[in-house]
Image 1 (spheres, rainbow, N blue to C red):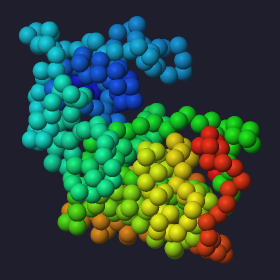
Image 2 (tube, rainbow, N blue to C red):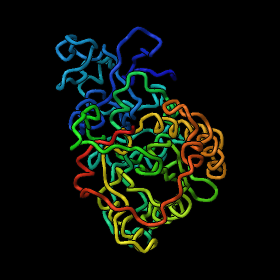
Image 3 (cartoon, rainbow, N blue to C red):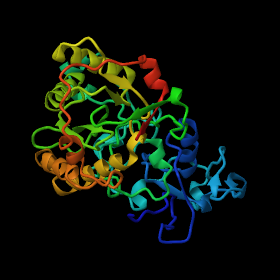
Length: 380
C-alpha cells in the first residue's frame, strides 16, 4: 500500500505511525461540508484516499464498542492546531503551505459560494467539479468541451475496505471532476431465489462503466469505456474522446459483433444516459429490446476484476501519459490472458476455449426489467 498522511493542517501523522485514520464522508454532502469548514483549507476537496487521523476528533465522536474503532454518525473533526490569528477564520489556509502543489488557474477561479471547495490539482490532476449534464446530447455535440462530463460512478464498498490498495499513485489517475456515487447495499448472501439472479455461463451478464477523465492523449482520448463479463472475467476497454451515448453504443455494437449478444448489460451510469445508449443501440443493431439496464450492483458483483482494471489503467497512464490509448489494447490483452485470482483460469480460456458459440440474436428474458433492478447478482 502507498504511503498516506493526515490531511489536517500541521499534522504529520501517516500510516507509518500507530494512529487510526478515517476517510472523509464523500457521500454525505452536508457532513463533508462541516468537515471542510472546520479544517479551514482553501480551495481543496478530499479524494477517496484522503484521511484524517483520530487525533482531530473528540472522544464523544469515537465509537470503541465494536471490534474496530469507528466514528459515530454525527462525528465532526474539531481538534486542530491552527495559528492563533487563524482560530476565528474559516477556509483561509492555502494548501501550498502544507505539502500541496500549486493550483491551476482553473481551480483558482472556482466560486466557493456556488460549489464545494475544489482540489488544488497538479498538472496531472483535473480540477474538481460536481456537475451533471443539463442539456441534451445533441446540444453537447455542439460544444463538447462543456458538456462531455457524465456522472461517472464507482463503488462505496471499495471505500470501506481498510486495506484498499492505492492503485492511483496518490490520485494521479483519479478522476477529479466526477461525483463518485455508491452502489446500493445488496445482500448477495441471501439465498432467496426471488431476490437473486445467478450468472452461470460466460457472456450472459456484462457490466459497463465509463472511467475518466484522464490526461488527454495526442489523439484526444480522455475516457475509457470498460465492459466486463462477470462469469469469465473477460474485459473490453476502449478509449473515447467524449462521453457521448453514440460513442458508447458504437463500441458496444462492435463488441457484440465479435462475441454475440449477452442476456443484458448492467451499468451504473445515470438513468437518462442509459436511456440514450439504449436508443442508440436500437438504431445501430436494429433491435427492439433495451440491452443496457441501470443497476447499482454493477461494480460490486465482481470487485476483484474492478480492482485489476483500476490497477491496469493506473499503470498505463503513469507509464504512457501522452499516448496511453495506443498501449491500452496490449494492457487489456495481458489482463485477459493472466490467471484470474478468483476463477484460477485465464479469462480467454473461459470465454473462447469452451466451445460456446456467439448468440447472434437478442436474448429474451423470463422476468421484467424491474425484477433485474431489484435483484442481486451472484456468480456461480
